[in-house]
Amino acid sequence: MADTQKENAAPTSRAARASKRAARGVLRWGETLESLFLLSPDCPERKALAERVVQRPDDPAAWYAVLQNIPEAIKPDARCRLFRRATQSIPKNRPELYESEAYVSIWLGFAVEQAKLGQRQEGADALEYMRSEGIGKRSRAFYETWALCEVAS
Image (cartoon, rainbow, N blue to C red):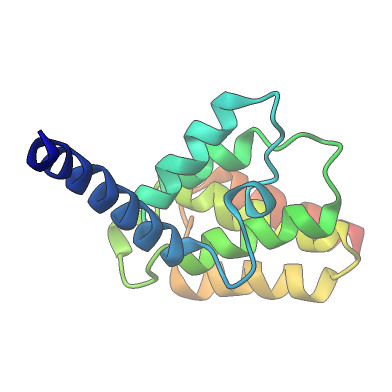
């Protein structure tokens, strides 16, 4: 009987260790899933989306789903940090993503969040990076956001 319990316990602990290793790819020292993804206990849907990002940190669609649903009440610096983490987690050497709506929207969101923080130059730098790398070069939203940032400055 004891051997059966050990056999059943091993996969559970192995799965828990694998989950923690995956989370380390997105989370930094001292962060929790709740603090990074701005989760509240009353929103299990957002937690499920955040867990999807932890499992696939290089998936722009997973990040985009989380970033679309950030409550407006969240502080702008926390929102900006989350957008920055998304841009850092998705590898830059994947040109097939450069026209992906999710990937382009993440970068545009990052530039907008920086501008909201009063970091207009950093937002403009993000847009310039997008332009130089060809991210969103066929995206209407890219040029609209660029124009809005130009008008605001």
